[in-house]
View 1 (cartoon, helix red, strand yellow):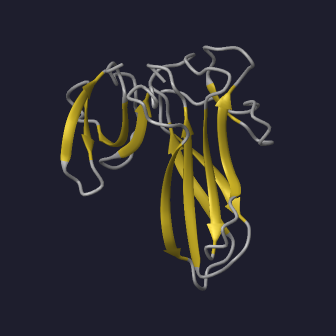
View 2 (cartoon, helix red, strand yellow):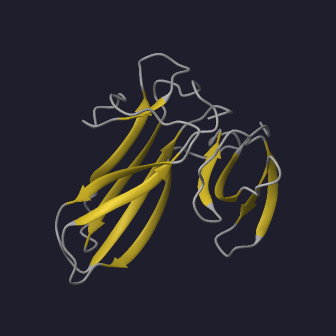
Length: 171
């Protein structure tokens, strides 16, 4: 539908409300207006999007970071900073899930789930600690906040997968 439809690697300049979208090679592919409320960003870029199926994408979308060398490491901890631009906009079936796979086993284990905090539309995204599809813990705010989860197991390689499924503008 063309309005607030984007997904990708994002740079939010500190002096404007625009965001710059980049492809995987670091090439600027466009600008999107509208992200005005985020704070606490670490680094130059973050990943995000709105209205993920607005331009006919099939949901969910998958983002995978593959073959991280974990040889010789134990007691691994996953850390991610999460924020939302618009509070109270998630529908009951919207979510973002973080998963992992050790040694390319083909089996994904759950790390962190962010879900709507209710069965109604227009709620806040919230941490789902028991992976039942309903947020039941810390709400995601407009300030990037660190969330952590232990990674069980050891091996030589680690894959991280983010599963994105939200389909309304302003999410």
